[in-house]
Image (cartoon, rainbow over all chains, first blue to last red):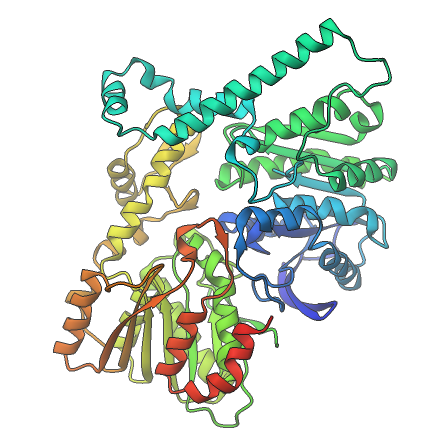
Length: 321
Length: 298
């Protein structure tokens, strides 16, 4: 196996990356790691190098790289609220860099089949870039990918789903319901009242909205051609367009979410139930797994190994001619 | 703006990644080696060092950043990294910086745990001209042990309970056994970086107040969000260096964000740290001419 620093041009910036080549002839499939959220080519707990080396052992070449303004790449990103930064990624600010990286990997390895792999913001960047690539993108591995748009203008109540609020409160406070000490802390105002209040409000508001919608539908059923439910106010139209385009191109998608990741509820409500479950075109091409216990960033090696196991099982869908 | 030149350096069993920022000078007086911190702080601060490397190069000072073996782009396993191996990496980075720049002396600029290790390395070398310590950890075990809280919080999400306390994890690490709960090895820190026994054993022994010191001119910077006094520990450390006859300055730098605190603002530069350090290195005039364009360009 070899690892080789590479640089390539994207617009005005020279981007830096790392190319991983296996020993011997590489497999027909190569993987391009698209930035890991705000962590560039490394990923939380250095999971991208770990994954790239694991792939190289299986004969798969891959490349990791920093988009403009991250890591060793040229460019600058001005100080910005984290949620606004994520919002700009979700609108596609690193798509052009990804297209340049695809061309670089093609120049270096010329794989017959190409898979893009991205976590969190890297997942949405990979999805948005894939339909615009000059070459065919055969597969997408999308971990913890956000389906809604983030903005620092949103209140926490807008970003916490009722399902996540319930799960969070249950996880952290269920045991304390029977604890005298916990009640004492509550009355002494030593508990994290603000968090409890925020999550409880999100749960009550979200649940009330759902019940109201069901009651309204029962009293006055919508016409048959009406959408099953209103679009989410933070819906990311770029996500749905790109997903539809890749399904039409017959790409194969592997989507992984951590069991404790709040984003999985958005995905379930906005994409899995209405599209993957109900539309055969999506159902045939999108494979979804929940990784037990896993958090948003797949930080433990056990969760990273689980992601690689899902990838191994899914890869024949892409590799088969 | 120039990207750094990436290259691997042979470190025996594993290769160490270095990124070099060349300066347009024939015979530089010294090269700067940028020594990064611990675990996730190195990922977050990597880009800050890259911008500083460019600023140094623009001021005519060659610079080199590197990933410890087991970190980032370097090969090896994170759990095998420990103060002894990381200090050996710093020494290898010093040799690489001298070789690539042609300089015979170096300045070490370290961040937090990296600053601690840089101070220890400088104490046993005679080619360190100056030492710049950004928020050094005087007794780093205190911080590492505090960071193990994240491993405890993780358990409340995973198991709705704390199955292994920090003390139990440390005990297991020192005994060389995993802390297995529900199929997970909880010998991790900072949300999932695997810890090794040597890391714990050696870090527990580090106390900059009771170790040999470098004779190099030293700048210790305390970094805060608002103006204020340096911490007690850093004042103690400054006094200790001064008692040893070291030409030492302790100063406070205000930055709008402290990246190692995982703040709600995404930041890629630490302009006030850069400016104070460049002034200390005698690059003030060059800074005005070149560096502010790197730091402040729109």
